[in-house]
Length: 251
Image 1 (tube, rainbow, N blue to C red):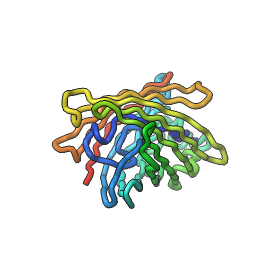
Image 2: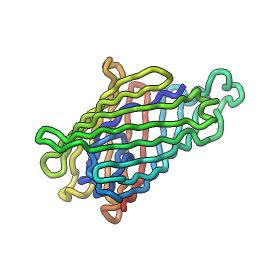
Image 3: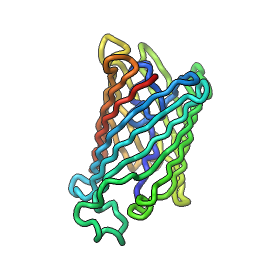
Image 4: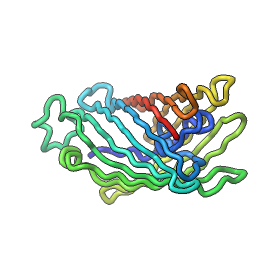
């Protein structure tokens, strides 16, 4: 069964990357996000994931188009879907022989929905909560043993200096009757003299058993205007690599 990513951590703040916003504004983050009612954004993201560098049958990729909309001041709603390709080792044991050795053709894997509400900006931290729900489509249930996932994230962040930021996420996710918790922390800062130009960040992920470390390095830059943002990054684990590229347009 596909293991759901349950962490999100700060990489590049909205003030650094322009004024785009939304639940998919960042490479791998839920971050405090000041939005006004009626603001919206479209985005598309591509991820290529190497689970085991010695086993190409564990590779997979996904394309994620999505839309986010501010239902009210400081309340953002996001909806997106995953179009994905899985190597044969991801497939349920009873189905593997049908698709060996390359795995099934790409298919629509799941749809996901998320609400984020900004609670407060205090002297100590900016505080927000995010609640998400992912629903697998029929083919994902049959081939991946995928199940519905409900997750919630406590978001604590703080800006300092000229658009530099640190953020902590604590996330819990429930799938197939089991609940797991993970945390993520990160730092981001402008890389040029222009505080609204290119920015770079580092993200660190782990669970509370401290036995599943990974690190993501990334950059974010406006393209043409502050409303269009390009992001890319690479995440490293023990034997895994995940490369992400995304483009977002806010209006």
